[in-house]
Length: 227
Image (cartoon, rainbow, N blue to C red; front, side, top):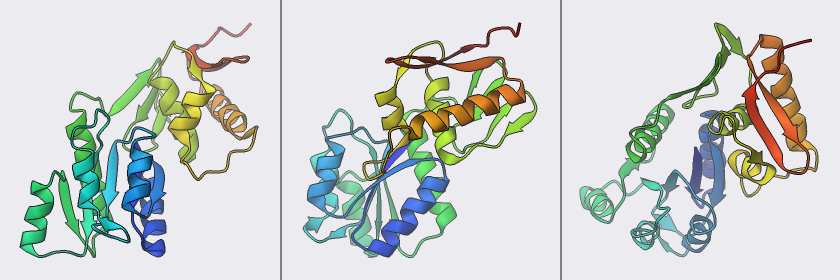
């Protein structure tokens, strides 16, 4: 899941980024109406957590501007404007949910996940390929009954590959699925992370494997029998 945070308070922005990142999401951050709209028109997002009081206007204007967009995310307004008329205005203005500051971290994550399920109600919460299972709402994965110890980005890599089992996934697609706009990616970072995931699958006895296709990308497919 890819999330956009639109918040101009640096400390709160960092906290929200950590919170959503730990929940297994790819997180991008902006601090104004203008930069938020630019981000939303650049990449597809599942959820946008938006403050109403931004330096260049009301965050609700972002929701209204994206009302007819094909790739419109679900919008959660996160704001100190707690008066009933403000809440009603936000929901009538197109927001999918409205949460008042200060908030409980667990409630925020729960609301984000509910909004994501509403956008795609037929989506299974668990992906599987062979004897590998992956929980979409966290980074829990297992091979048979053995749990895999995955770092956040390793889980995102595996998710992108499992969702496309048997199909080639290009490096660009993986980078978009795993990294945010501001992440620094060294030339061999992705390859090193894929190598770790490949080793963990092998060590756990998975009957699927990640194969590299030089110059093209990667594919998750049935493992070749050992000689």
